[in-house]
Length: 444
Length: 114
Image (cartoon, rainbow over all chains, first blue to last red; front, side):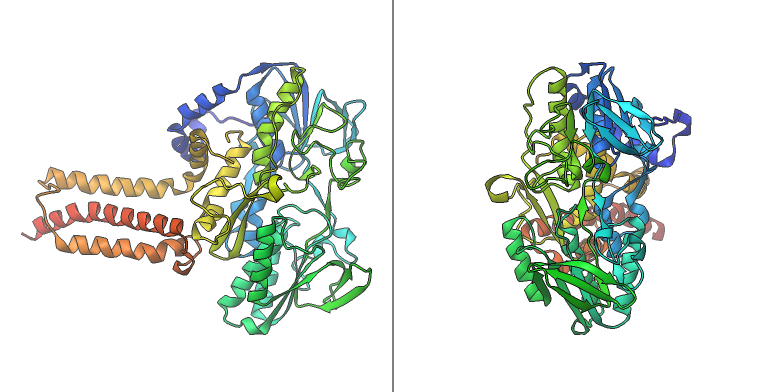
């Protein structure tokens, strides 16, 4: 299945508006596209996943490769703008604002398989689908995203989100909406104990748990009953954030705002009916705490079928959990015809949409080099970005990479990553979503 | 991470559609009022109206309040040099557009009253 192109007379309103806005830019797009030389190839390329990474690669490769057979495996019909879910859960955005049809983005020349993948035979270059059919590939791009392991928290499941004072922005758009409602109910209750957790694994959008704490605090302040609400934040690490300066900043800000920090603890069990949460400490002991509201962030890993394949990391910090790629070339460390992009890869940082924007041109360049029997030359610097919301209405545009102890890599010289600003908030509220969609289309 | 001109235009192509009806309506209003004014003898430099200038200034100043509100924020969060530069440029733009609409309009109204 490929994108259906409407005849000119049947353009819908959205397409017409977009056409109008895009006409002025058309010549520039053409010029930009001509810069990358088209490559003739008969390669069979399979892209696992139609999220940010998969969709961006489908568009880039369909523009770059002439004659390639490109198949994208994506069971969902709708594309979710997940970076918007914290704004949904904070009551700032309507949920509908984060949803688009996959057909809005899928290029004409890409085959769309809706049957989910269930296995990868890396030796045979073969992907198995849920209906037992198979896809053979010459090049595989693993862009599956990650798996939310709610089941690793005893008593927890994503279906509980919205009930018993439980919120979790990660589970789905519906869960983000129910999280908003759970926070509303807690605040309407007039006071009580709120717990905000992070798991002992890498997570996507590592700023989201912090944003949820800050936006909830913002809403509590708005009702002018701050003293009636206790807020506690739990993290298994000693820091608050991977970027050191931001970590120190957050510690000070949490202390100033009266959000109690608990380091070296993670949520291990929950009793929804009793509204009690069990935390495991570094020494293995446990503590039980009552809550009126809890924001649960589940442990995360590569999807089970990726973990079961030979593509998973065998050693090092990502062993058994994440895709084994070179963190700079994004090529698999043992299977050179395999590339990884997005949340699924084993990398010290990088599970954000902004990372995908930086990774996509690297994967494209190194994949083309591989097709031409050349070594990979493009290098990912680890760029990632977090528009860190510190209050509803202001944010910090935190951008950094692997090098120099995760040093800042600001995109705009006029926005200081160390300052909270309205401009950074406006970027998050209005401009990052269009930038994300342009990335999906392979235009940036 | 750097943005090319084509990249910026690609982002704008995705950002503008929701606002295009509003932008087109504003442009249509501006052109219509200016056109009718000019057809009836209005000239920018020959017509003077202090009230128009005052109202345009007030509308521009009001931008400092309603623009942050429109973006789910508030004036108290406008803090950095970039924030203020952006907000002041926006306020100036609103004041100028308001004046360009009200100035010929005041000429037309004055003509009706004579």
